[in-house]
Length: 342
Image (cartoon, rainbow, N blue to C red):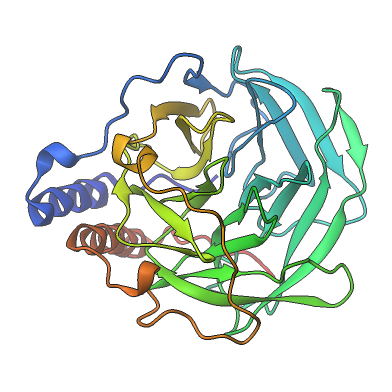
């Protein structure tokens, strides 16, 4: 499990965030969940580094998750009513996953598991996505997923967010960078033979996970200190987005929508980690929900400036990036950066 952030670094980052934003009241705290969606605690001691969440479409109240690393090729189904694991899927034929960071459910009824992390600073020339049908029956089962090789058009990246669009089925990955992360679009159809090139289509802040709304009209991105929801149009997030009331979590790692699109579920790493239900911000829910639209063809350039909607980030977003940088500096000072062998 990743060490939690040093207390001094966290305090400094939060203080800087409040000072620079000029609105301490904007510090994120979870609101009461909407009826029918409740927060829960993951009780399975095997799940120590829950790093992704995906709401089941065929098993009401069940959420799929996985460990970050050092666990094996496993995906777990957790019942939100009890916090207990009701299924463990073993993926065979893929070798040992390196750094599994995200999971998403596609419109084809299949789970996409992103082995996309790279804590060596973006040095692996390829990463992987595993895909298998969501099990119709809950229970321990072994599956043989389709394995896809992923390469980025502009070189290796470290990433923690993978999102499958619920209408088009297109796969997106958000890279994780102190300076400027990127949203990468996969090919229209993933191929199990050869490599799948992902192209940068927008800039994003420091992102640890993301999720599309069930209708495909919105994209929510979360980081350590923020969550924002953007209208989705023409294959890109648009405008400045709307702030979501993400809870404070020591290792904020995951987010997904409930199947009705009314609630966001925020997860974190750690033993007995809490998944917090937060109603979607009113402004986000009211955002125009346009059809996905045609995405740019291969080789087409990103929008001017590269930022969502072709504009620059708001001051608030930049503050969040700065606060994250402070925390990262604290991590370096105490020598807690984790390294793995490739």
